[in-house]
Image (cartoon, rainbow, N blue to C red; front, side, top):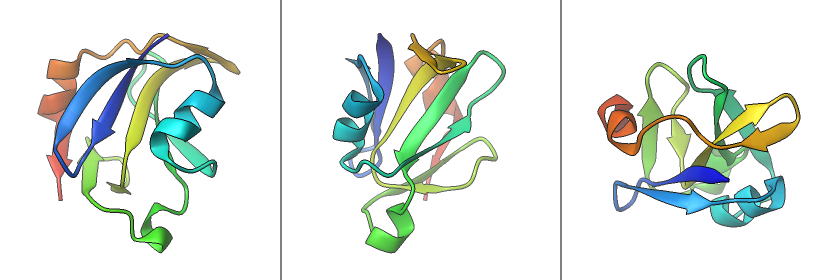
Length: 99
């Protein structure tokens, strides 16, 4: 399914394909995933739960969500089922603040 990979060190947003939570963990680099709702359309921002403890590089914030350190993935979620992210990469760029 369609997902967005946020790499704060390079300030890039890339459209990727993920099939499972394991794929998300592999992209984030850790299996201690946490997520926050990103709007009302079902998109979720997945990131390393211990990102600040690990000292992961690059920090960013989307809207008024808590800041995140390190790589993150946005993917849609309907209940327990993952689905395509609905947010457009260009729209996301307007909502991210790099710290």
